[in-house]
Image (cartoon, rainbow, N blue to C red):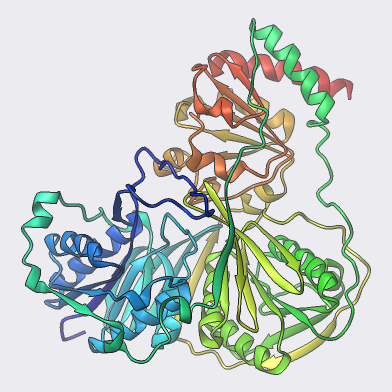
Length: 596
């Protein structure tokens, strides 16, 4: 590109999380008490600032920072300017109060249009308070931009960018034509951080303010938000929190007796109740099926079938690529399968465009998509294009009085909120493992085909999938490794893993050091899993990691510190050195397995 890049960076403030945790309280009205909560720039957005400034300087271009918020949000803009951004825009007006993700995206897209044309827009992968990662894709849809998420490597090649991106099941290489909007991952660049003194020294004249009237008639804020928050509750642990006492043999005696009573070693069945046949006709539940993620699609179709049963309607699956057969998809819960046929690869934005057309034709009640990089873009684009309410990363779905209710974790999973949508179509993305697998039925789905013409703005070159992704999702036993276990001693745990047929997962500290692949990371920014049994070794049990194990059947914790938070969020705690406990536990479990 001959001219300098004009770059916009969209940032957000979030509660300051000290040591990975922030104390939250609910007031008498059930709302979050925000008084006294210190705010900072969202950690992912700090990377976007740093990369935006770097690219602008390298190309002799311009980097402009945008944020939506009250007057106090100026501090975040000052920090970005202290890092080297050229100027900043504060989008602030009482009219923006109560904005959900769509209303926020509309305001940001309006501000971008107000400030002219940008070659590249950067934002954080997600915010650590809401974690949905959907605003970027919604802005891209409203601004007519290509979109790629989870960027960890980036280089300019003429009129396009070469990218390497993180996915929940591996890494992907891609190229994208400019102009484009990218969400960036933590590993892209060192974050932008500056002291209060450096922020205070910034020239305030470099910050301009946009009011609602500058962006048009709206509606803005709560009036333009198709979702609203109902009941909010603090997330409570359902773990027993039993600290086993006495000698190691005595602790193991008590543990094995408890595990036998809970049938935790039986492995359990990988499905629960059967998928019920849905009644043909409206209302319908649309399900976006991600190519190559059959198990995830099975979870979503089973959940959608139960929603359809409550609605008295049917399930319509939207498939592209090498989707399973009609008999398989029908067994999982689909009544109709719409296959997208195209001359070239169909990307997420192409699927979203097809779904927008289907929404116009079929008037479905709900759209359900996976909370993966692919699914978030599909749902976010479709919701933005149709003005529909979208709940991201729902932990459960239900129908009450004909309306979809999505329960969503927030603030690192410390809160759960019930979200409903006032729009005709109610959209939600759901994380893998949030919904139980259901026993397949015998049912042949009806097939419809739709010709699709891909836009071709994003080209995916290769997708390096960790083959363990599906194994982790279906494992009866997981062993979670923390930073308290030296990587060169993992072999001492292998006999236990082999005995139980367990898959390995880890905390973020472990994957950050590449001791285990990032695709095995469990927690806020990783997987949410639901094995019948999980053994946590060498972890302190911080909320960031344990929230990903909330759906596990039984959790055993091993730690030398009797006061470790792990023991409050595990069912049974073995207190002592893991290097002594693990071989003793392996020996005792081997006796149980052999005699079973």
